[in-house]
Image: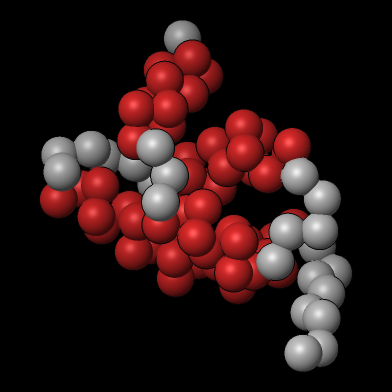
Length: 80
């Protein structure tokens, strides 16, 4: 399979946007209001910064299976 390369973080964000949007709606159904950017920042800073050579599959999996309690803690920390 050919490796996909992104020219910028914005290109990667755009590629992952459908997964962010889906997770945002899932969380909204649970009464948790977050934006796609909130999800992006949490994963970028707290999860993905620990790894190299992540695949799109890995990233989408992380988006769809993120721990809500850790996301909320992160958001509370940055909103103080």
